[in-house]
Amino acid sequence: MAPDPTSTHGVDLHSPGDLSGADLYRTLPARPIDPAGFTHEHTYRHTRLPVELATTLIPDAYSSPEFFALEQEKVFTTGWVAVGFVADVDRPGACIVVEVAGRSVIVTRNRHGQLRGFHNVCRHRATRLLDADAREVGHRGRIRCPYHSWTYDTDGTCLGTPLFEGSDVPAGQEAVFDTSGARGFDKADHGLLGVAVDTWGPFLFVTLAAEPAPLATQLGDLPWRFADHQLHRWSPQRRRTYDVAANYKLIGENFMEYYHLPWVHPELNKVSRFSDHYRWQGPGMYTGMCTTPVSRNTEAGGWDGLSPFSALGPRDADAGRFVWLFPSTALVVLPNHAFVLLTRPVGPDRTVETAALLTHPESLDDPGAEQGLDQLESFWDLVNRQDVEIVERVQDGIANPAYRGGRMCFRFEEPLHRFQNMIIDRMVGVDRVPAGDEHTMTRMFPDPG
Image 1 (cartoon, helix red, strand yellow):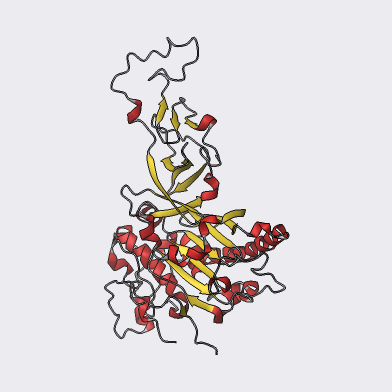
Image 2 (cartoon, helix red, strand yellow; image 1 turned 180 degrees about the vertical axis):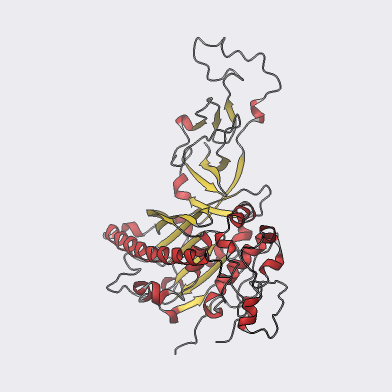
């Protein structure tokens, strides 16, 4: 199959001319790269080439503590990051505490049911307000600092500041809390530090950007592509956590390609055949592929187990959609369930994954729903553990200074090229949403018929 001419990213690409593979490899930068170069376009010149000529992202992007620290700022504080599920904050006062770019954030609903996000920091002396496992903000829907008892409501307003103002003063101790000497202090100036929050489908997103672009800009055409699935009605039923000794990008890049299926996933390969794969990418900060038709289970398992969502049209009713939401979330949507990986980078060589199995609004009406969920959870756990093992092996290899980058396999790895160029854009300060393929679905193999 000829290289896909739509795989470039609107970058000023410079051809390497007639360089042989060996000559091209010799032009790759030696390791380690000076961290000052991590924000320079020239550092990434080999990955900026069209995918049929490109080499992978620089190895330091997966192993360097300096790159990791810069990436946290350049990538994770500048756009929208999926951090959890709408179902987890389904009422006023319900909350989750998440981490973005190493910063703790509270997501909750105020008394009117509106979503709110706040840095998990008291305005007094920066005490962490809520623990990571908190599911309610606190008594009477108030967030109370455990250090000096400053208190906030779920709109972020500062309600009480003992010893600064006479709020929440124990009976009989009013004299101790006399605030007549406090000057230049107003509770209205000391509310919680806000964080922008939004939703799409089942997901909660936050952004740390001071003036963020709309979430819709980052999602591109995904809401249109998934319109018939009514994803806002899907909810998580099972969850597992995995501690992975690998960079989060290796997890994402492994998810984006099926080149590895026959060797890493013999069970999955039986229900996700090479010949049934399409690239499925429009404009937006994501990579996507599709399998159709959806294969039935084999003796090793598969994607059956629950009834499909009856609202789907013919095309969606027999297709699986695989999307990596930039920068760090995997979404698999099949006719009868969805699978999500929320990845949280902890270090250049460590990631914490939250894996969730989601169901559509009709699925739990099945008499055999629990058994079906058990089967699906077991199958996805098998697949994910196989992926964890292989990406940890990649992390081990990429730490070797002898490795300076590898050649892209254009037929299978165009989504990786798309993703890596999104990372490069953020690292060098380019604000761009990649365009999509000319056709809605691009077959990866010639039609066998």
